[in-house]
Length: 19
Picture (cartoon, rainbow, N blue to C red):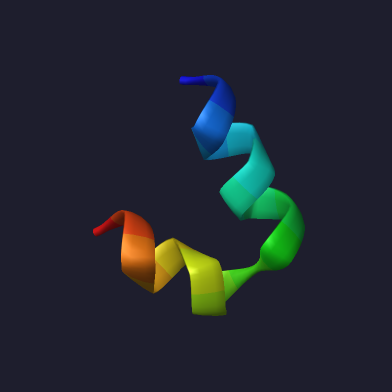
């Protein structure tokens, strides 16, 4: 879950990778 916070910091760009 900690990674989720990191992705939020980057924005949608990283968010897409999460998906």
